[in-house]
Length: 144
Image 1 (cartoon, helix red, strand yellow):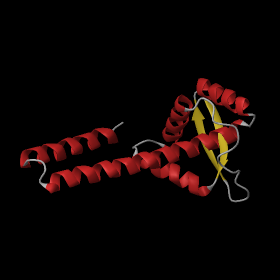
Image 2 (image 1 turned 30 degrees about the vertical axis):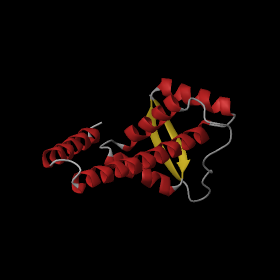
Image 3 (image 1 turned 180 degrees about the vertical axis):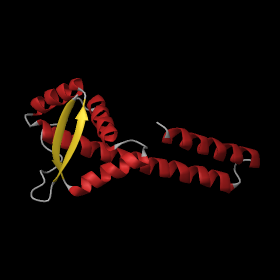
């Protein structure tokens, strides 16, 4: 295991903490989830930076990660020509942005299901089955 420390804005730390709570994960687990997912989806982020380095208002975000993940992050940062802290910060930002996008899509789906069940287009039995399936799916998704 490797210990890392990255300077982030307090607002990013709070968003990561909220994300961890809503996913029933520790902050460290949520950080690892975002970093692994980001590396899977974007082995190398396009050149440039997504986030800005916090100045005097930054807070240290301390976490532990597997050596293999740390090596992959170092490789990604080297390909971008930036330091690993900046790459990590950008990947955490991408993770939060993706989570926000997915939450919006879930809200749209929930709204569509509600419209169908209340419109009368589905039989009473179909509407109840759809609502029940949606509740089961949401409960299962919370345990991931």
